[in-house]
Length: 375
Length: 264
Image (cartoon, rainbow over all chains, first blue to last red; front, top):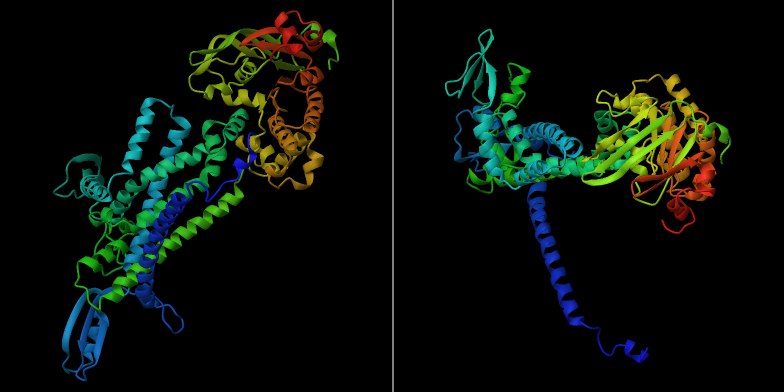
């Protein structure tokens, strides 16, 4: 080397200030995002947690979780004491008044009682749509990764599926309304007037009538399933491909058929990956409002979905309440006041906890599967 | 090691595998050119040659595992196994692959227990009786010289075994299928010399019952265990004969050049 002393720098390292600025900017951006998320959660927890949790044992207000949704009545009694009562208890109260007057009465829709209806509605919608989406999605993924020849046509199919993921959820909502609510065929003996097409079935007086499933749990599940199908298909296909080729070779070389190979040597080992994708899908399905607005959700419903059904299958054709739609109703359809806050923040808080619990559950399941099926 | 040359000099009437004028192509790339070869019963036949010479392709034609590669296929010629043309449209592919077992270069046990790996093919065939499966597993593991090492941990994961043990497990898995022919695609390429030695000893045991075809990069391995050796180069069969003859008095200048290490 000509002069080894040139290896020792004089002053600060090259680009010292530039590095510092870049580092500061990137760091600031990151923490800015974190702060926004933290503020959001802090606000919801601050206003929502007191609704659900109480200072006294059992520390959880099960009423909010397990009671039906009711109108809230706010009024002063003759002593000037302010009362907040849900509709059912209000009528009891009025009965025992014996004609004593009440003053300043106000009512707030949906703000009294609990939110058991939206909770079970969301649970049913999530379970139903995940079952549908996993069945169709994993089937399509198996076909695409294991059976289909890698032709330009299959690439186009894959591209089309990917594009589906970019469609706004309100479009899925309208699609679900047009197709599942109004147009899909049902077998019935009493076709509706607006049926698009009636085909005879030649069995009793039953006909196939293209009249849709109406606004119902089934239509909502189908619409939500359509919305998350691209996510499930793409991720499932990836995790199927991630299974080492050697497993397929070994299985085929031992005389397994294609389907036996997939069933015993590919699908079980790709389950953790498929679960990961469905984990994200679960949170999305539980949280979407737009797709269920026209296809399944109602703002108010007296019975729980499974109550007062003529037949268990009627569950599928009944409308349900849903948490995200309930939150939308509380926020947009009723005037906000100090008396509606409990319902509003409480619902949001419960919703967040529910989604977090669902995600945590699938994460644990995935971890368990991963530990078992590692290679 | 060639034990009884006399028998090899006069091969049995119908060879275990008869390959005639076989041509094979991946899309438009020709991988095998007019390969003609008779592989005798209960001998170890080695395919040697430089990388990309088509020896693995040839091996993989013998149980039609190449079928699953899109755009690849036999363009001319035929393979008869025990006198049956295996490319007939009415061949029972699953039965063919049961009768012609295969062991791969990279050992590939399933991430299941040792026991489940060995009885995998039996379960496929719908055998679920515990006693029957136990017997098959023990026999196969004994034949693969693995029984003594794993008999106390049959129900632990196969991935806990060493590389050599995993490869012997794959051999046991293939044997459990009761094949007639064992195809081995560089079975020792991923193993250390000691594990390789064990597998080679195992091969000598196995050839009493099975016809073995082995692809190898390792010429010393061919001389140690093969009765017959085929030298392939650029998709063509250059020379085929008893191993000693191929290594000591090669007829073809290309074989001589390869064996002496002038290329490859």
